[in-house]
Amino acid sequence: MGLLGKLFGGRSGEEGKAENAALLRAIQNVASADSPQNRDKLYRLLLDCVLFIPVREIPEVLRHGSDNAAHPCDIALQQLRDKQQKSVTPAFTDEGALRNWDPNTPFLGIRAREYFRMVKSTEISAILINPFDPIRKMLRPGGRIARFEFEALAEGLVPGRLDSTGGLQMTIAEGKTAHVGPPAKPLPGNILDAVVTAGRKAAEIKELYLFDMASESGETHAVIGVDLHAPLEDAGLGQVLKGLAAAVHPLLVDRNYLDFMLLRDSLGEEIKKIATKLLR
Image 1 (cartoon, helix red, strand yellow):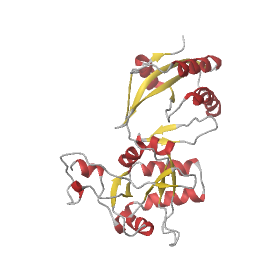
Image 2: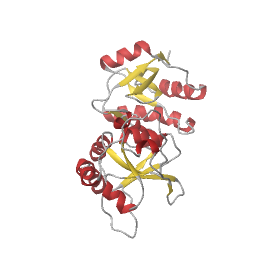
Image 3: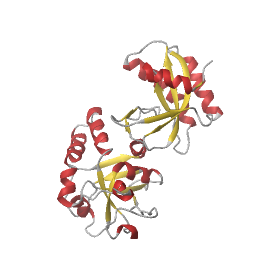
Image 4: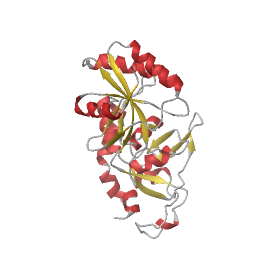
């Protein structure tokens, strides 16, 4: 399979609807009962599906059905404005849902993670799943993927829920790989000071470490590794991580983010060997 075969899916019509039947059920389940379990299942399905994306025009290299291209092609995504005048873009689970929104728009079937990476590189604030023209009836369940969600999904991560501090728990999806290494550059001084100060105030924290991590085919980003004196129950661990997140959240600008990871078991020990200690 060529480059474009890996990037684009060929599913359309009823075939696309059948392929995404589980995704549609997951969207409906979240709409009916928005629970962490239902969201987790939806996110995991979004990592491996093909979405139908309306575009301004089909790139020339794709018009003849070839899955190989000598050069990368540019894809112009549709951009709309929501009620808050923020930039959003539509995506669909199948061709029928897309045609219910606009019967005439050109579209591509794009593997979801590649699509999320495309949108991540823009100023788009949210992805609208299965929007529909108000003059027509809703054909498929839909929803809205916020920027923090599709940024995580682009990295192969399953996002949790944002809390009042701006903290967010992420999970590496089963079967995905992550690469860790020494930090390529130090944290900005004000963020480093905030992390260290918060770490020293938390009696549960033994040491903090800084390292870089990249999920499978994703971008590299800084991570603070948290080493505890003793294991904590989920509630206690959540309070420790929220305290760290609250200390740095006001200092993060331009959608920069800082991850925190609990270092434990053999993986944690290996990370400690290559990471930079922050508490001394």
